[in-house]
Image 1 (cartoon, one colour):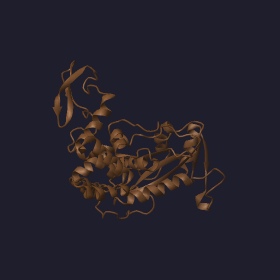
Image 2: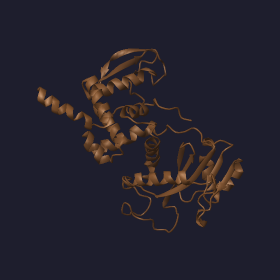
Image 3: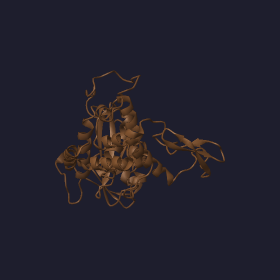
Image 4: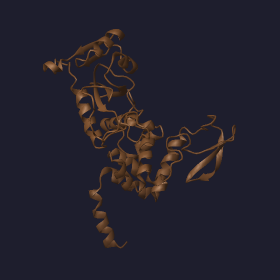
Length: 322
């Protein structure tokens, strides 16, 4: 490249996004995308490297395979590398993983991400859920202060299933039964006033007291104030576990009583619905992965492809979960 070509090329740097600049920096430092990804994987693994079979830390180097350093465990004789036992084990094209992680952070569809990374759409789908296996677990351990809880419902979907348990319908269709029925999946969301959020796929049909008992007790303080709408399951649940509860009567048009409202959780529902709409129907069995993905984006806990790759391998380098 001559000087004139280089000057034209350099003038375009100011148009790059933040993520594109990070990717460009990694390329310049490593010399190749494969080296950038492998270098990061090896760096992440060094802090907790051990034999996945017997947990021993007594091992030695044992050559290389697929661009990664291999090790042999001295006590059990098994071989392993930095990806053994992780969600990314046995996947190919490591040089494209950082680009694909960027696609996830931009909420690309399966096909759009496949085109961006130049892989088959089935590979793109498989990578999506492998990347989210551990990243989605980075959730608050407990909600504090005032917590709002509310449920939303999405149509049950068996997209991708070989054997349906119900009559077929067009994708994006409507339920055959009126109101809330066993054709819809309940998503329970609880969110405190600091923005910490937990969500649960409680199953088909209406929210019940039993479903609240199965989901909320491990993730809420006992001195918490639980705020909900007028659903009858919440006051019974709160009374049985001994926490304070307040309700707003949305049907009567009373949405706010001082600090008692569910506007934060309803706003989260709205953002979640708008975001899910772009995927044209999410299979119910994968819904927890999508909820975790949405939390990653909404909470802005993972902001770069490198951080997402670290989270995929079980390392969360950002703020400690409360």
